[in-house]
Image 1 (cartoon, one colour):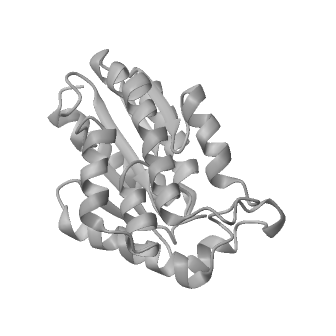
Image 2 (cartoon, rainbow, N blue to C red; image 1 turned 90 degrees about the vertical axis):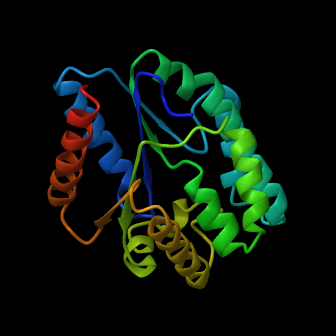
Length: 212
């Protein structure tokens, strides 16, 4: 199921890669061109999903099991998709989400090493089979990304080991390789403006194709 009228755009990448900044810049660019845009994030979005976000990212919850983590992300995603994303797409909006289900493949699948088939099955249920129209993967080395995050404000996921974050990066690159038609890999080493220009060029092509 794709958005019946709108366009679903997601941003992915390791911690500190700049995807949140680029999500906002793309929102501003599209709105300046007259498009109706919903910018959201995962975990989060609706009230219930934001409550789950607090549980997931709280640095004190070190005892959280990988299975619990996966199911909490999926619960947040289900509420997010059903309450916000699908209705917005049906109203013709461009929905930009800072993370979506590819993060579960990379973090809980590749990094936590949970069963990928189980993740895929739960994903289909939690997302109502919704897939992004395009996913921008801002690729950056974990060393470069994590140095941008102040240790005193790092959340539970950001505090994971460098080896964990290396597995996350590989997980993202692997899924991008499997779905080259959906993914656009962007070099995260560029300046904010350089990355934004590359994303806008790709988006303009997609918007023209979809007559938006």
